[in-house]
Length: 306
Image (cartoon, rainbow, N blue to C red; front, top):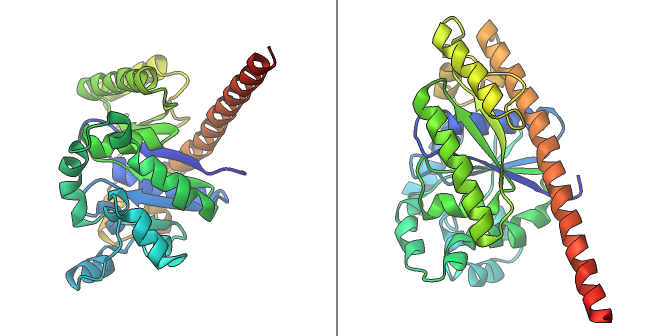
């Protein structure tokens, strides 16, 4: 791939498995041969760092007042000045290695006040595109194939920054009526963003998560999601697996289990399948955007000649 692909996990609801999805999709993408960066915008709890075994070390840096610059710094007006003073090391200071090969920019307590700070920016486009500008200028040149964002489980200024910066949205959903309503609301919100701000963002992957097909109701909802989102539904569902929770507690994903259970193996296969179609869909959307830009440029040149 010659251009960094971006996606974010989002649903205006907590507890659907967004962070688990980011961690496992990130590792799945690495196993498929892609160079991946994960970014945690979900809040100071640092759950993405816990999934990948960097939480304790980063918390020690925070306690020692050594976690600077950090993810909240890049939203500040002073970030360009900071980056210029630090030179090439500015962005490198933000990124941590993990034992599962993906890189991560972990969450920081400064994210908690960020929503209010962004709310003080009067111009809506400037308020919502701070993070996109950071990615375009400082992250894309690093050459990652894919950047995945973990967003807050609610709609606020931080999550809007993530949505504006992402070409595609990954939505993990459990099998229930409330999740179906939230997914439909998200689809409408993305349409509003596209229409109001001329930002290309689409629902790329709807990932059925924590599915227990032994229950009739779960099976019915699974089929309903497939019918409602035929172009976005993931190829396979992620089953409920205690092994995934155990992996998180031990600071790694289910991919790193020495003796995974059958449900953990099935989950990993589902994440690999989802990762593969995510890249295909993001690359396809990116190609369409480039074609539209080229058509617009040709149109402008024609008008100039006339």
